[in-house]
Image (cartoon, rainbow, N blue to C red; front, side, top):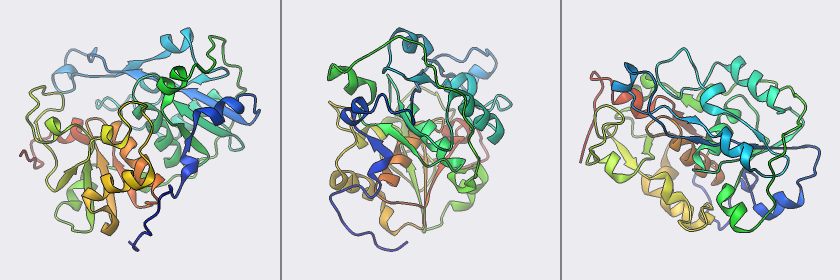
Length: 303
């Protein structure tokens, strides 16, 4: 990968949108705003709970109480997972995904703004899924709902009235990788594996066996998704600071970068951060530790 010029600005600032800009453009007819909130919850399937204790649930109830004026709701746990997989949060089949987001009002001719009332990872997850089908006119609200309400910006409980749209799929197969692709990357010096959970999950010291065996994929570097944001405002770090964080993984020299976490959600925050800085060689391991940690045939490491 060619050396990247050091700069104080994001290479792709359009992947984020600021709260002030959004408030000024709430009435833009070509804008589609979506709350993507979900919450961690116990897996309702008693048998699967032994392997995958958590299965996120919808944040629709909070959305119906209050949301950014004009916003619609994208229900990730209900509509944007592969229900044929026992893994909790796998990317759905391409047609399922495009049918759902089109019905919500996403169209080839609109700009999409995504936010969450909890972690920004839910917004970045939808952003990454849109990217994987070739929809590149989406942005994540910087600081999300937390920043919006802290600034006393308008809120509403009115129903969304977006007309159905039509998303033309132009798949990018490299956006997600599977377990076999990760296995084949082990020992490849051109590949950087970034583990996006907290250090206690990375080193195995966390005694909550949420993802099967504790630890991380060998060769990984730990860059917690939370370290990509300002702890008070929730906004992404300025470009120069963000670059210092991600380059701990020697990303500038990498031919490919694979991010992963527990279930492929936090990993999309890391992927978004890398894309903000101009990296184009990024993939998300969708099964992440939910799959890897429950497969005794693949190596795992603690330290």
